[in-house]
Image (cartoon, rainbow, N blue to C red; front, side, top):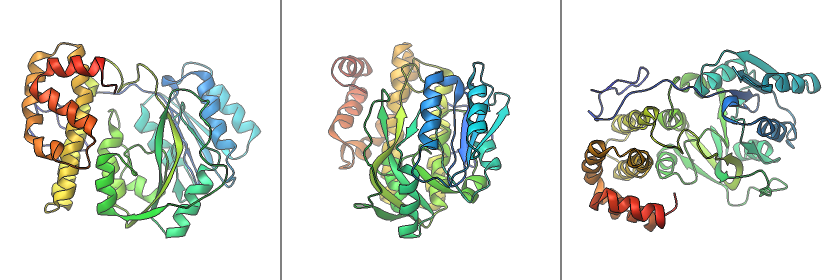
Length: 355
């Protein structure tokens, strides 16, 4: 039985066998002025928080309000945030009981006083020219949103891609093109990091609380509210991926939030682009290829019955994946193997195909 997502505008889009939003227990958040910083405290270590906050304090663009939301941390993170506020009058600290990542983001937005906001998780970081770059990018194209791609890192020793603002190669997209790119996860992603938002847009479409895959569920609405989205070619947001993170671990019921998030996206496309085959194909391929991460967790837990159902559902999208020139060969192989045999897929994936 489907458990509707309480804020989903499309609670009956797909009668999927795996659904339901489950409470999220993640940590903390930061938000800011021309920028908004978000910090997920429980999920990262103390040194990570320092590196994250200081990546904002040391930005070349200094006209910032940095809002740190301490979401019920149990270590000394709250004290560290207070120390930063005492040293830098741009820093504002809000201490709240643990309510999860999305609630902390929404609290940060409400307490930001600027018209533009950015987000940062507590174990991620921005390159030092990131804010200046995004502001310049927005101004150049008079855009409603400016975005740079997110790059995954495993340590804090990755060299900066830029030492000065360079808008060469930047472009501007309309909402339809930006949404298509979002579904493919290319130059515009679903993660809120690396984006400069109009505060009014995030206030109108707040992050869904108490769930994971909240970014995937709401990013469409954020982009769809924009006429023009300016996109830079540089990777200025560093996403620190930890082993054991919520979306990188063994099966947990919360991971099923993915299906509800995708239900929202299917509904959005039905509502706004019912006759656009390119966006339809993009959302279908996103469902399948991201869904393989859920499949991987199921395989670890030997969920044979659920895997059989998921394989049957995924098989409907063969043309959208195999015949899609936007899907890379590696992902086509993964998908094809899973449709042929989940056991074979798991064997090949674990030995030869790194996620």
